[in-house]
Length: 488
Ligand code: UD1
Ligand code: MG
Picture 1 (cartoon, rainbow, N blue to C red):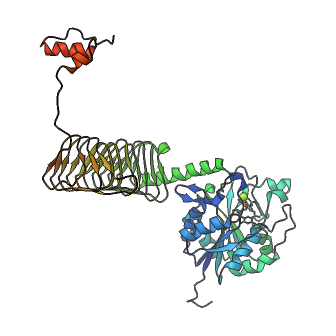
Picture 2 (picture 1 turned 30 degrees about the horizontal axis):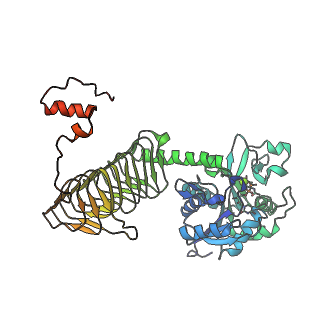
Picture 3 (picture 1 turned 90 degrees about the horizontal axis):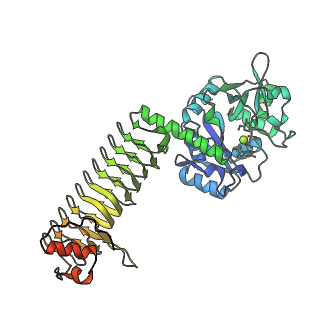
């Protein structure tokens, strides 16, 4: 091989199996953990090897699995294994679908979401340094049941892998197991695959038979036990899905704490793999930071807050809030009990307060929607204050319309803005106003009629009630001796 011909690296990810124990309409490897599909985690780890090509073997529900892989990892080559005749057969399908293969081939499974790129890297490096035909990423486990066992001779050299169903009672005692992740010299793999038979308990073509084949050929094989065996643990049912999901979350939360994030209660904090947190962020109990959520430094999130694909500015405070695809500016305050729907953009030092729902709403710097409001399809200028209990009536039953409010406006309580309308800079409204027409800059809009008092109404219409007697005493200028206000 010439110096320029750098030996390449191919990763093959097996994901053709049915995963029937999930009892799910959704293919096993498509189930999400920490905001990513299981196979998404494995394909992300594979990127750490900087591979020349990645091949995913799909079979069961290959349309769904293939479409998912194609969308998230467009460079991954798909190989179809119509019927599942074993891991050796699956890898054969991958090799047929792959382009020119040279150097190292790493085989992994699509259902091991804890697998890390640096572990794969270390394993591949060791395999290459030892110039082996095959390397096994093995693990020492207390209960090896169900796994292929790594058989070593008296010198400790790896001789073969024997599957659970084919193992003798003595072989079953071996606690060094095949994690399923193997590294091959590409040339050896191509030569060995057609030599694998299926004369075994399952009648399958076992990829693990390549170990014995290499030994027969006098080639070097070896096993590299991984310390953190959990990384190679597969998910087969929903109990394992939850357990591995919790473990991945524990690892993600811990790594953010090491990066300088305060997490008050790691047990009730959930952070997806793609979320990014700044230094000195504080996460209070019961918080979920999902999807591609980004939290700027010094922000305080929670308690009891769920943010998906949100961007929270530095120093912002977000309390008891549900948010999706929303942006909160620097040092802004949100919550408690706020619902930020997609398209919400709050500027710097603004406020979205209690029981406020926002959607497609661009709220300027320093602008405030403090209480009990619905803000949909709106633009609110900087420094404007929206009164309590305001409804942006954006929907006429057929179409959505926008409301635009200028800068430094002061709208009063219990307003309805019937879109489409514009309220100018520095404008104001009276309490209870239903704004149906544009308000020019600086104008005060009032829509309710003048107040009319019908004197002594309660005395006539509520005769004999506590209401009537209270009114009577007050009108007489007397003292209210009867504090009871009991209902008769
Ligand atoms: C396999 C290994 C075993 C190892 C264990 C680790 C073999 C023969 N055995 O056993 O040594 O300890 O994994 O978990 O390799 N798959 C396909 N096509 C197939 C068969 C399997 O794509 O025809 C995929 C499955 O979807 C799965 C993976 O390969 O992701 C492993 O298959 P599985 O049937 O679980 O193998 P095990 O019997 O567990
Ligand atoms: Mg298995």
